[in-house]
Structures are given as structure tokens and as C-alpha cells.
Image (cartoon, rainbow, N blue to C red):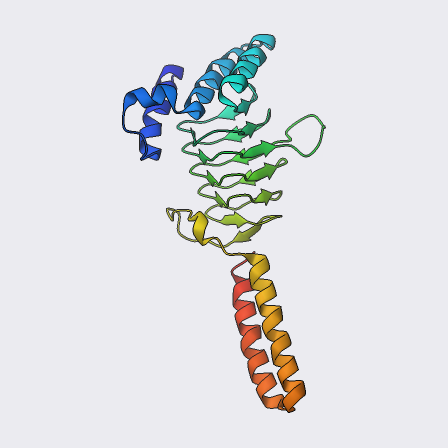
Length: 233
């Protein structure tokens, strides 16, 4: 796509993704993510021409103005939307597909100082929640969703949701399902809930000597736990 068409799409994309936008004027004063992306488009163009200092200077100026740090070598597709933008970091060897949404405080970073591909590859239609850290040369498949404050260090397949620290993968078959950050399962809570209930069953059986009741309730707990584990990958 022509660079100017990409920039036009970047402006139009804000309206598609943010219901808080009420006027064109707001684009120029309230959307640092948009301006960080425009700075990057220009810096990346110069970087591909073989220049190094000027693109890095533009990147530094953009970071100072917008608080978004995007390395000029990072490859960003069409219609990226960086919501709120504050504290977003996108590393040198990142590759980001089309129609990706990134919230504030997200890091697409590396885990080593080695040369070569060391930052994430993000597919199309991916949503990365606020505060998430996606680290290393890993791939987020198309339509993947990353829960807020998750730390992702392994590949996430297409149409899956990753949550937690470190992130665990939840199977998901619906490509267009919206990521609800207020409905993300708490893996640690579920585990403790299971253990507490199981201890209560064992204590009750020791007091009453009713082993049949213990076996029945224990079997039910195991079924609940197994169902939860099958939802994880």
C-alpha cells in the first residue's frame, strides 16, 4: 500500500476503534498513539533507505512527545491502533500484521542481547491488553488475544487467548469474539479453590469416617478440575 494511503487509513482507523472520538479535531490533540505511528511510518521509510541516525532521531523525538517507543526498523502493517499509548514499547525486529489493537503499557520486547530476530511476530486482528508483555522471538497467531498484564513467552496459536504470568493459553474457536478483560479466568484462584474444597472433603471424611461420601465428592471435584484443565493448553 502507498505510504500516504497507510497514513490516511491510520487516521480513519481511530474512529473505527474508539467510540470516545467525537470530532476530527480530537485526533490532533488526544491520540498520541496515532502520532507515534505517523512518526514511525516516516522513520521506517528512511530506515529502509539505509539511513540510521535520522530515523533514530525521529524515533527519539516521537518517544519524547508521545511516550511511545517504536524502533524504526520494526515492521508494522496497516491499521494498527494504539489505544491511550502511554508506555508502549515495540522492539527492533518486531513484525506486526494488519488490524492489530494494542493498549497502554504493552511491551513487545526481547529476552536476550543476541543479534537476529529476537522480538515477537504479531499476526492479523490481534488484541493485546493493557500492561501485557510479549517477549522473545515468538508468534501471536491471527485473531489471538492477550489478557491485560499477561507475560507471554511462548507462541500463541490462532484464535486463542493467553492470560496470566507466565501466560497460559485458553482454547478459543470463535474468531470474532471480543476480548472481555473483566471476564478473564483466574487460574491461580481456580487452583486454590479446588485445593481448599478437596481439603474440606478429606477433613470431613476423617471426622465422620464416611468414605463413600468422600469418594463421591472427591470424584465430583476431580471432574470439575479436569474440565477446567481441558480448557487450558
